[in-house]
Length: 162
Image 1 (cartoon, rainbow, N blue to C red):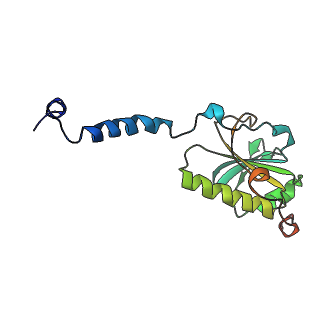
Image 2 (cartoon, rainbow, N blue to C red; image 1 turned 90 degrees about the horizontal axis):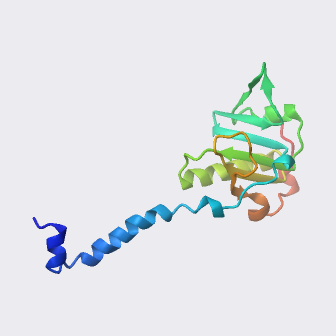
Image 3 (cartoon, one colour; image 1 turned 30 degrees about the horizontal axis):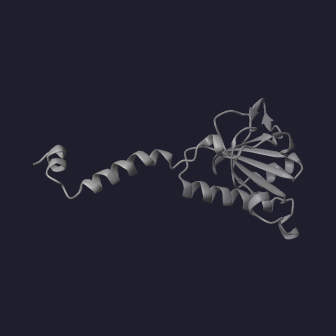
């Protein structure tokens, strides 16, 4: 079996293929946009609700502060509306912080689900952010902002839930 040098010296017909594969392989590192150029969130003080999402079985409401005996209260999809009603918070801006371990399809699905859920709970605007493990939300990368991607929700979507 010939080595790569022998193929290159003998005029290997696949030399162009090798070069193309090398360029493609080194270019794969640039598929994820440079985080320095992505939009950042800077409205943390305006957020009525901040949710740290782990899974639909457990996530935490960080704002308004929601603790019991000093610990964050675990919330899940089925009891979220009940917990939210208990908090009696404004419904202007809801923020959801997602982890970084989702592939693009999962991330897009989660964003759509959160937007739907929060619109159903009467939120006028929903922003999803890429988390970085810190509690501070200002400066996080914006994954989705309904003020940029969706029209204002209709009045049928503005109920406070039960």
